[in-house]
Image 1 (tube, one colour):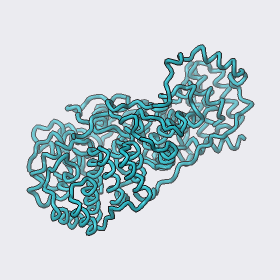
Image 2 (image 1 turned 90 degrees about the vertical axis):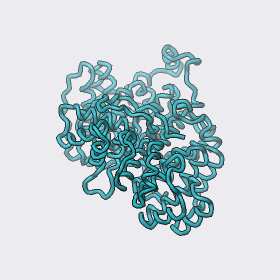
Image 3 (image 1 turned 30 degrees about the vertical axis):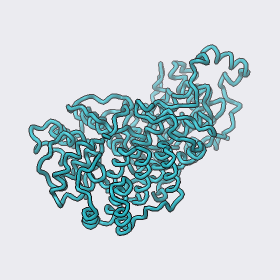
Image 4 (image 1 turned 135 degrees about the horizontal axis):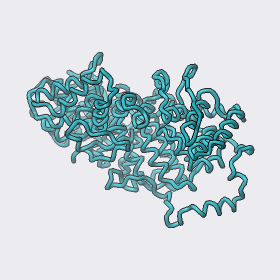
Length: 596
C-alpha cells in the first residue's frame, strides 16, 4: 500500500505535465496607452473578428489511478460518523434544493458572452466526445484553434445523456489544463456543487488547484475526496488545510503521520512542509533544494509556485509548454519571473494581445526589470505612440525581428497587433506588409488588415501578404485568380503552396473547377480519406459547432504548424466555414501561412 501510494504521487500527480489554450476570443479593442496594470483574472471573452492532422508526436497522458482503496487507518473524523449523521451535518450547511446547481447544463459562457448555443454538441454521444477529449494532446498547433476550443469547453452546453454530469465537467476541465488554461479549468470545476463530485472530478480538481498554485482551494473538497480516495495529494492536504485554519497541532500531526507512512518523501514532502509553514501561526522554516530532482510534477509546480520557491529551468524542460502558461497567471511570483510563462501563454492563445502588452507594461515599470528588456519596452512605446508612422513601423520591426530565425517572432507579432491595426496604409516593403498583416490577424483585426489590399495588389513581390489577405480578409481584398495562386505556389514553395490551396478551397474562394485543378497540381487531396475527416465533415453537416471544434483540435495535435498536413487544414477550415464559424476558419487558414 505504502509503496503504491508513493508511486501515485510521483506519477498521477504529474498528470498534465507529460502532455496536452481554450484561449480567449480575439479582442476588438486594446488599451491605446502603454502602461495599464495587469489584472489577476482570466482575460474576458472578447469580440471576434468582423463579419486562435497526422498522429501526434507528443507523449500520451499517464492514466489516473482512481481505484486506490480507502485507508481504514485514516484519522478523518468524518469517517467515524454514520451515513445518517453525515447527512444531518451536511444539511446544516447545504443550500436549499432550489439553490443547488443542476448538472444538465454546466459552463459559464452563453451565446451572449462569447459562448455557443446549449446544443453545440447536438446528439453526438457523450462517450465519443469524452474519448476525443481524453486522447487529445495539447498544446495544439494553432493558436486560433485553441481560442475556439476554449470557448466551446466553457460553453454552458447540454450534458450528453450517456455520461455523468460531473465527469463531463471533469473531462472539459482536464483538456483545458493540458492546453495551459488553468483559470478556465478552475471556472469549470467550481461550477459543480461539492456534494455532486465524482472520483474523477475530485482527481481533476486536485490537478486544477495545483495548476493554479492554490493549495487552499483543495480544503473545501478534502474531506469528501478522502471518503473515496487515499490519493497521496489528498492525504497530504490534511496537513496544510489544518495549518491554513490555524490548527498547527493537527497540521504537525498529519505531517508526521504522512512521513511515517511514506505518503510523500524528498522534495514532495519538503514542499508540503513549506506550505504548512505558510499557514496561520506556523513556525516552520523550510529550505527547499532541487538537487537530485529530475522531473517536474503538478504537485511540485503547484506547491513551489504557491510558496514562491523558484523552479529551475531544467525542470521546466521536462514538461510541456502548457505548464509555463500556468506559471504566467501566478500573481504570487515576481513580475520578471513570469516573462517566459506569459510569452508562452500568448503564443498558445491563453493570453490575448492586450494581456501580453499589459504584462510588458507592468514589467517595464518593475524595479527589477531585466536589462535586456528595456530596449523592447522603449520600442513598444514607440510602436503604439510614436510621433510618425515611419517611427512606429521601425519600432514594430525591431520587436518582431528574431535573431537566428528565418521568419518573424510570433510573440512579437502578437505584441504589436493593435499598433499594426492603427498604422495607416503607407509605403512598406513586401516583408513588412506581410508581417503587419500577420500581426493584425493574430488579434482578429481582419478589416484593418484588408485596408492594405490595394498596396498588396500593386506589389508583385508581396506574395505572403497577398496570401494572408486572400485567406484572412472578410471579403475579397485582393485579386484572386488561378494564375495568382499558381504564382504563389511557385514563389513560396510546395509547403506553403499546399496550405494556401487547401485554405482557399475550404473557404470556397476558388471555383470548384479551379479548386480541383489547383489541388491536383499542388498535390493536395480534398477527399475525406480518413475516419477523422469523415467525422468532422459529418459533424459539420449536422451543424454541431462544438463537435466540429473538438474534432478540429484532434486534427492539430502537434507542437507546430510545419507538421500539420494541408489536408487537415482543408477539412478543419471547411467544417468551420460550413457551420457558420467563418471568422475562425479564416484566422486559422491565415495562421497556417503566417507560421510556416
